[in-house]
Length: 272
Image 1 (cartoon, rainbow, N blue to C red):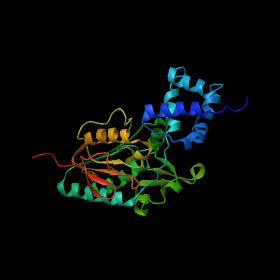
Image 2: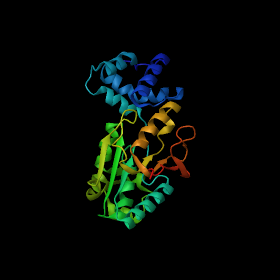
Image 3: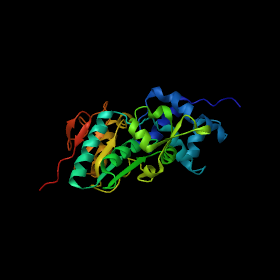
Image 4: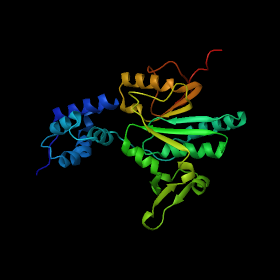
C-alpha cells in the first residue's frame, strides 16, 4: 500500500488537536514532523487517510490511541545539567536550606525523559543528604515518563555531569549496555514522577520552593502562556523561585513575580 499523504486541511486538524490537548501551537513548518511522527500509527491501524486516523483518536476507537498521539506530537529534547547557571541557583538555595535545617521541594514541570530531574536530585543529595529534600518531575507524555523512571541514558547525554557526580550517582554500562549510563537506584528511589497536563492541573497549592519550567513556553501562544504560568505559580510557595529557559521571558505574561536574574523569577513573600 502506498504511503498516506497528509493534506494541508488534515494538518490544520492536527494543529487544533494538539493545541486543545496540550496547549502546543504547531507552526506551519511542522507539517513534515506530524507526518514523520504519526505515519507508523496510520499504517498500524490501516487508515487510508490522516482524517480517518484522527477520527479514531478522537472517537476512542482504539484504546489509548489519544495518549499515543499526544506522546508522539510533543517534542522532548533535554540533557543533564542544561543551563549551568540554574544549577548554581539550586545549589545556593539548597545550602541556605541546609543552614536553616529545613527541607527543599523542587518541581521539574516538563521533565521530558528525566535528565533535569536527576540533575536536580544530584545537587540536592550532595547539599542536603538526609536532611530532607523532594523532587517531582512531570510531563504530559507517558512515553518519556517511562524512560525517566528507568534512569537509563546514552553516555552522550551525560557529558555535562560533573565527574564527582558521575562516580557517586551513576553506573556505566558494559556488555550489551556499553555506551549507556544508569542512575543509581538509591537516587532513583528518592524522586517522583507524575503525568500532568499543565493545561488542566498542577500539584497542591504552595507546595514547592523552586519550579523549573524551562524551554516549554516556546510551544505556547500568549494566552496559553498566561494560563500555564498562573497555574504554575499556585504551586509555588511565597518567596519561591520560578526558572524558565534563557530564550524565554514573562514580559506581558505575568506581573506577580519579580525578575531576580536572567530567566529566574521570585514570587513575593506572603503578607505579614
